[in-house]
Length: 159
Image 1 (cartoon, helix red, strand yellow):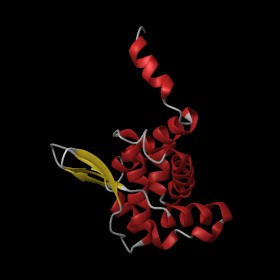
Image 2 (tube, rainbow, N blue to C red; image 1 turned 135 degrees about the vertical axis):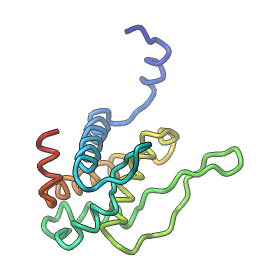
Image 3 (spheres, one colour; image 1 turned 60 degrees about the vertical axis):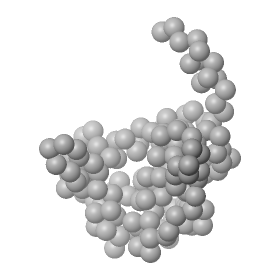
Image 4 (cartoon, rainbow, N blue to C red; image 1 turned 120 degrees about the horizontal axis):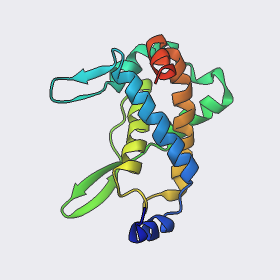
């Protein structure tokens, strides 16, 4: 494939390619599993993963204290929440957003926002030192969540 200009652009991006690829893959598979179980919403025009419904269902079974690594991941995301990208006039800005007081739903929103900020552009020049932490901690949480709901676990296994 001959893409010299894009190769040059890609070479300037200094993120951990393996970590980003793992997050992209795991997140995509997780959303696929949610949409292939009861954790979906939509109609004949559009379907999407229902992260809020999933978070509500696993909430009573999600215990961040089961491992120090999981507790650290949860604490990090709650203490350093991802920011939301907005358009202010002609400028893209990252701003704090309101906190959702249902911890598991809030974590699901933060993990989704990590993905959105990373893959929908504008993230490469914003807070890069924090990106590996956001991604790594999100993956730790998703690892536990993948095993808390039997249908989702099975859908992931069969993806």
